[in-house]
Image 1 (cartoon, helix red, strand yellow):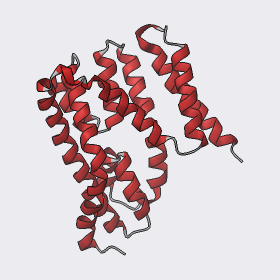
Image 2 (cartoon, rainbow, N blue to C red; image 1 turned 180 degrees about the vertical axis):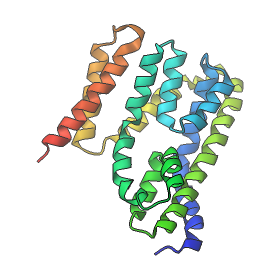
Image 3 (cartoon, one colour; image 1 turned 135 degrees about the vertical axis):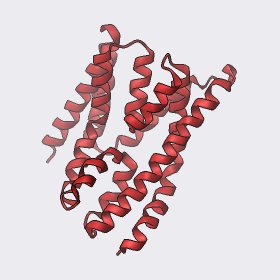
Length: 226
């Protein structure tokens, strides 16, 4: 059982192993920003405004490709839809927290933070809060620095290295990592199939249609499971 005094240190220590995929992910995002039509300052500030790697990468790549604003916003919302489940799982623990934390805490709720704190929901409210903020601020700080590093390194990377494959491979890695059961598998298969079938929609609207179809397929599969 964690004490109030050890909660901060434990949150930081527990976060360190999960930083291994975060740093290259953030650097790829910085590289994607540097190669897009978005200014570096605007792109980097998005790391603080959104603080959601997959969502920001989606927004950056679609915006850089000239996709319409509404489609970009909708795609970002779809990517972040899983946070509704995160919020539901943490709602009892957040209900015991002071108001300022209930407003501020969700900003830091990325995948890695959820994976750590969901196992601490039965802790003392003060312990939970200190552990949560310690782990969250660790991820937030490393994320900001790593995205900035990707912005700096990106323009000087030789074109012969062909790093353009990094973003698609990153999305593929995220997809494979997320397929952990029938609902996720159904969502992935349906999303890929519908996106392929609707590629002719203007402004790459097929991506949005495919994403929404995948969400519906995953939800229905989960609901029909015995």
